[in-house]
Length: 137
Image (cartoon, rainbow, N blue to C red; front, side, top):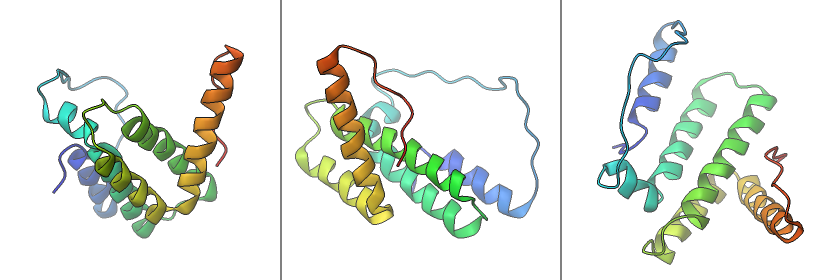
């Protein structure tokens, strides 16, 4: 039922069953082009919606600290922002609204974080300076 993030769900479920080891070198490569499922699904908001499903699974099944929760919210704010505000024009209002509704259900503070992030971008653009990448939500 995942188009983009099935591997992430696989890894979280694997962590529930056993320990894993981090290997810090690249073991796999993948390519990205406009005709991939990833390119279509990102424009339709599937990426952030699937990320929220995985985030919900992690929060339900793992002992997560408050710092880790904040980091998850920050990552989701950036992902939802890209899917809602940076999607190609062909992505309709309905798809964008579904992503925002999912974000509000996941955590209402996510929507506040989106508004704050958007305002930071507007202010930075007006002031012609780079946006502060640190988000405190």
